[in-house]
Image (cartoon, rainbow, N blue to C red; front, side, top):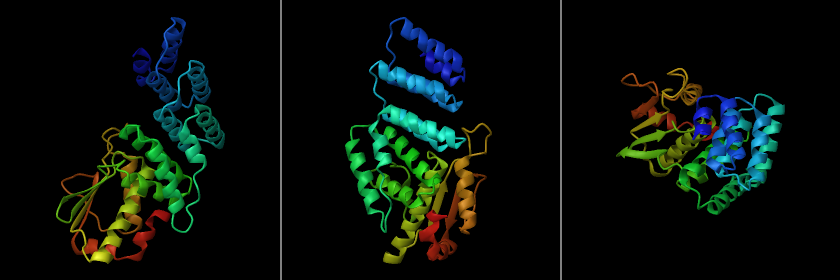
Length: 282
């Protein structure tokens, strides 16, 4: 508990001291405690300490969890330099989690992305015993990593499988007849952009097949309530930039800057544009 509290308070030294005190007292920390301390190290880019912690976990016979690997992958995505990215890659390998081989063996998208979808589907089946929140965290980190690495077709295919497997049950729902809500606020910005592009492309495809167009789409990003500076949501900024580039006919209402609304004839005309299918490649 004290390791977690000091870590969340941003006091890395105190958190590490209490972790060492546990070991010296003959107490064996559990994986969540180690993950909490690992998260603290990664947030302040103390990668050497993160490495030592992982080695300590392994020496104690503790196995890295899905959350452990997710923390490391997210750190790799946000690395400040190539050196840091390489070091994070080493940490991911040291963790020994099966998710690392899943990522290393990710096939190229190919002409239709089916190899990627099969690869992801098999991995999620293998991880079936993990709770949904843990799987959502990993898929979010994987899609964000692929998107920011320029592997946008692969990112889109991973997202599609995660959506089909109900990893993101709240991402898309029909509030009422032809009134849809796309919920992106629990995602990282790379995942949010990927999810939005693929979902809008899906709406276009459905419209061309059936002739039915959504009467309204609400795109919920949140407005940075949990950010250091209220109103500076990275997801909202990334989504707004994307919508502006592709001239999505959106507006906000009731002062809610974290929800972009498209409706009526302007929405229908926009969905007819062929570039909607290729937005994810930007």
